[in-house]
Picture 1 (cartoon, each protein chain N blue to C red):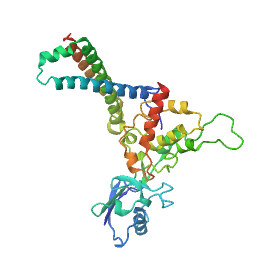
Picture 2 (cartoon, chains in turn yellow, green; picture 1 turned 45 degrees about the vertical axis):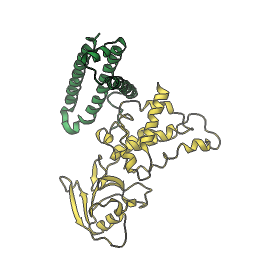
Picture 3 (cartoon, chains in turn cyan, green; picture 1 turned 60 degrees about the vertical axis):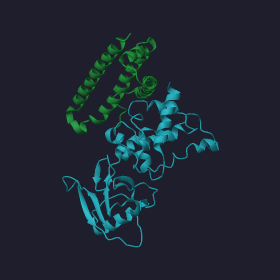
Picture 4 (cartoon, helix red, strand yellow; picture 1 turned 120 degrees about the horizontal axis):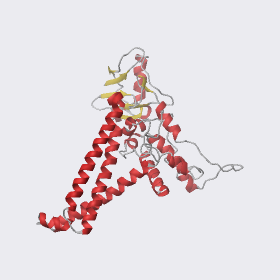
Length: 234
Length: 123
């Protein structure tokens, strides 16, 4: 199988290049893309990528595999290799630090901007703020995000306006706290997002849904934020 | 850097509502005119002018023209803010975007005035 890997070391290279490598795979078993990267790194230790848990929980090894974002550790080669070829690139739309490692600063700034924590100005009760099972159920499909950035970096609206459009991951978390019965900052949260870019730059093309390794649906959450704005703000 | 856009405040929500309401109005107008053609397949210019020249259809057509202009402006402004960026145009990006927006406004005003003139000639 031929593997083409994006290589860029800013200390040595003037511009990025694709490195083509021929790899002999074990014929009798499938393997994850991360396993392949480990094989390549054993031969060339200068190859750089992030990885940690190797089971789709930490969200470190998000990358672009044959044109589609995903987590290398839970993407089998059998699912992603086309015509015996695999092209590995860093997540699109963010500055590359080295090889497959991108600078996620802009992504985290947008995440921070939606205030991803509970805001409740009333005095805290002795034990905890309670929720009914129905209220808790509204957070399903929202809290599971691991911030791997696969969705946000697959979104053209984020590519064009990364400083203004929050992006699907940030907006999923924005709705996670808008939907939380214990949060009292709903009006302020919505007011912070009513400009033409933060939420409304989403055109609903659903790239985010297509690539999410946790099968979450940011487009639906964004639609619900828009609905809340219309029903509460008009 | 993180900003909430060159047009802060509630313009995003207002634009969103204007685009949806104008789309509904344009859809209804298209249905009215298309439906009229469906039930009058052999109609010519005189019959169409008679239909559009009624006070109700004149008012409806005027609202539809205004909706089309508003809808187009928001869409074209969005396209401009997506693609006319320093990444492609460097330091002159702001000037390019301003020229583009002025051109869009002039074209839309010209088309709007022309369409209103044409439609009200039928009154």
